[in-house]
Image (cartoon, each protein chain N blue to C red):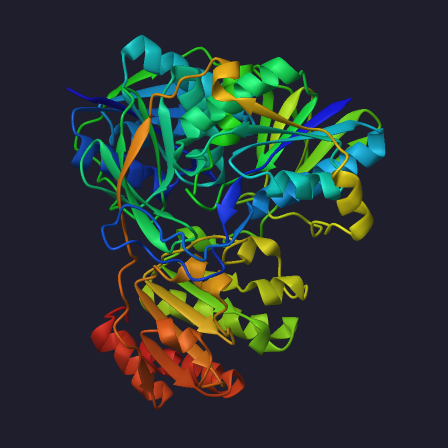
Length: 249
Length: 323
């Protein structure tokens, strides 16, 4: 069995994010980069499936930096692919998915492909659905866990309907919500081992892909600024605010 | 002239308001012909009402489609788009919508954008990015466009006087390898935070799971007094402590909400939480710590013990209702 986890290198949005004056992007000075948090949950589930089935686990990223792939190898992935592309952070989800799909065609087939439900940099939920369409895979999104019951892959989802338990036949692509278990951290032994694990660097030319943008980010604007808040002295005052200012009662 | 197809999502036997908001975007911003599509078990019963919102309504009803299976749903939508020469597909950015949108986009070779909160024109959308710390204004360059609009961001369409033509289509019942084993339904009447007009959220400051009962009482009275949809939210700290289910979580690893009013009760305002609620129209914070970061984003704040403030607020609102 072969499993693939797709991960993306994104700015650490827990830190201060500044938009450039001209709105052309975010200020990259002093920016920290991390693995997209939802991809980390996907990787954790992939590791658990690998351990349960003795499967091979590969990871894939389009990036100009190997750091997140080395991390994935350090927590237990067996092999990594990096499609080297300097402007990876400007790729729209349509083109990014085309690149992933081409790598999967060339390096697969995979029984299970996992990735985050959303990438927090561009707030895109599209990768899973695009890959399911491009590759003709079975597909389920927003899972919180996945495990084998015998040979059946059983996933759980939390939705507006409630808690759902589904099974999905393979090959399939699954996108991950925040998981039921925290992603593991690399230990020293893992980090040492990761240095000897294979990490193949691919180029767009090798994949035969040319990029025609599917969208163009015209500008970034800051969220509407909040006027300075007002401290109210009593609950009566709050009721007045609800009545006269917010006008909701 | 543009042609738009809107997926009318059904939840609890009704077309979701969020889907009517998507119809509103099609009518008011994109213009041209607006078609709707209903897919699922028993959706035929909604066709007369749904047809009043659109120029043409496609209906795919089958007992086999007792769950929003993404593959057959998306294939049905893609077939209608190709047959009718449709350029735009709109859907609400719910769990179901975000699952189906990119699958449809992949099938019809479209660009897919989700969580859309604004539209400058039929080609330029606006959506929050980098954990709500910026809004991206994005020009869609592909001929076909799939747009998932965030619930509550746009005004819902109004029903017309005359109904659009209803077209029954042969259901696609190949479930794409997916089998439903079990669904534990939500408590009836519980409103999802993403669809609420008012969110009442609790955090670590509640001190324990039993205090969510107090918030539920506040929700009940707010529902009665305002007549709006009020939902229960929570911070990650409260979810991690096991006090409440993850489906209520607001923040970076939870849901993103932008209700009319957001009550942050006993929530300090960690940056990850702010990422999920800072676009709310009004933020009202109740916290005993005057230094809590939540007061920096709040429009109104009360510094005080929530065990006194919340019961008093419930009481005053009840009195207000009586008068």
